[in-house]
Length: 279
Ligand code: AMP
Image 1 (cartoon, protein in one colour):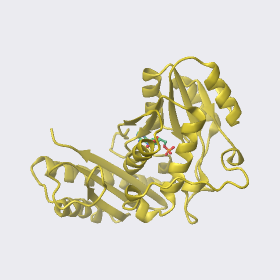
Image 2: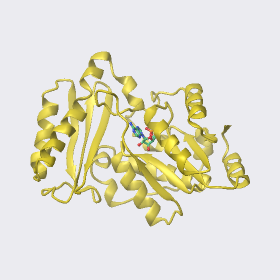
Image 3: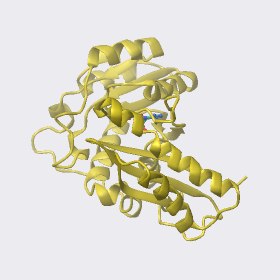
């Protein structure tokens, strides 16, 4: 496994290898969710590239950039075991050199949900992912359904800017009690950790109602809010039953629905979702 820092090294290794490449972008502090993306990429490509970069442009001024957890030695061990070929761990100046001034803005699908709560977030995500696509030139790029809106934004950007690659979205990996794996779960105290599966319980309650025929979007949102309200440590940021493509809130959820939420538990801001489609 090659571990490199410079763009020139990534480009050289990419150029000298014959065969297809899968790319898995990450911010490090890896867990079984990230590993599932690497394993999928391993199965579907000749070579697997992984980036580990805590991207400053996707953090807001009051967010956890400085505190974001890091453990490069452990990450590299996990990636070696998962069969990665190339790991790019650039310093910030390699990605954003002095004088950097070009950003990628995806318009409509970045406005609601996470975009409403974190106004500059997706500009940072789209910009860094566009750069990753240009540096690695992968045949396929792997993202998690955990970040459902990010998946929609990246697909849109790849289509709109004609990136010649396939965007692959992988299922959410969860703890046994339903909590979606996240690098940010490390912020939870033991008491908060016990409360955190409430997100998944709320989503499952709405899914059960939808499967039983409930199609009223507002009723689905109420079901989720009621479960969250019963947990005193959970402070909801938003609760959504939206169109899976446009991400607009639905009145009628008959043609499929993305149920999603962001909830503060202690200093962690947790997100989770479930995608319900007909058939
Ligand atoms: P991050 O390091 O948080 O930026 O995540 C890197 C990639 O891993 C993103 O595409 C995430 O959606 C994905 N990911 C994070 N957590 C999970 C999870 N629990 N299950 C599946 N994919 C995940």
